[in-house]
Image (tube, rainbow, N blue to C red):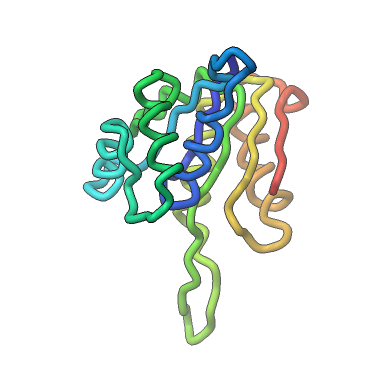
Amino acid sequence: MKNIVIQGLGFVGAAMAVAAASRVDSEGNPLFNIIGIDLSTEEGKNRIDTINSGQFPFKISDRKLSEELNTAVTRGNLEATDSKNVYLEADIVIVSINCDLVKQNGQEKIALDHFTRSIKQIAENISEDTLVIIESTVPPGTCEKIVYPLFKNAFNKRKLNINNFYLAHS
C-alpha cells in the first residue's frame, strides 16, 4: 500500500486526505495509507486532533465526507500529525498550502514564505523516488524557479540523486 502524505490540512487538504483514504479495492481494502500533516500551532493541532477523532475539522453539510473520514480513521488508513518524520515513509507528497494574497509596499502579492518553508522541510526529509504534487495555487514559474531548486539543493546536501525525484503541479 502506497503512503501518501498531505501537507496542509486546511479545507482542501483535509478533503483531499479523505478522498484518497476512501479509495478501496474490490474487496474493500484501502489502496492508500494517508497521513495528513499540519503545523504544530494551536490551530494546526486542533485540526490534527479533530481528524484523528474521526471528525472533519471544518463545518460542512456533506454527510458522505464526514462518514468517509470516520470510516478511514476507524479502518486505520487515515491519520494526522505535526511530525515531519512522516516524510521519510512517503511515496507521494501532496502539498496543499494556502498562499494568501497580501499587500506589500502598496502592491498585492502572493505570500509564499510559509509555502517555501514547507517545501524546504519536505525536501530535507523525503526519500529518493518520491512524487511531490503541488496542489497549492501558486504563480506561474513557482515550481521551476522556487520549488525545484529547493529540492535540488536539499538533495545535493544529502547526497541524493535529484534524477530520482518526481515533481508535478496540478
